[in-house]
Length: 168
Image (tube, rainbow, N blue to C red):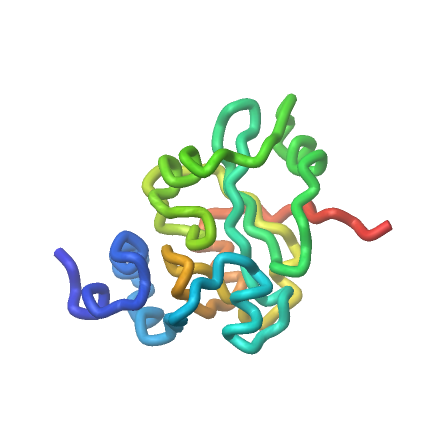
């Protein structure tokens, strides 16, 4: 049953319901909706007025054919070799758009860190913990929500790892 808060949320309906199921209904009032899409971390940071590193990117990869979600700060890139090592996989590649939608229920550019259609292994880069608040997609490219990174990682069921590319 859809709650009034979920029905009036700026979030994707599936994500709004997930917030209720997780006991996070108070986040509905903190979701910010933008008239223009914020599909990239840079667009989101500019619209919110926060640092690029405060954006939590939710990226789907495949590890030996199985989907895995990597949560990464917006200022960094995922090092696929590090992900491969962490997972003990033979091969890690970026997932195709159709697999992202099939796995999560959301389109690229709007994938939230939790509330997905299927249960997926989740890795969160330690860099997210450098911030008091991070902003993540709320199920569509027009909506984001703020959350303490420790809580976000816990609700995503993520394992904290070091998988970002290192500067030369």
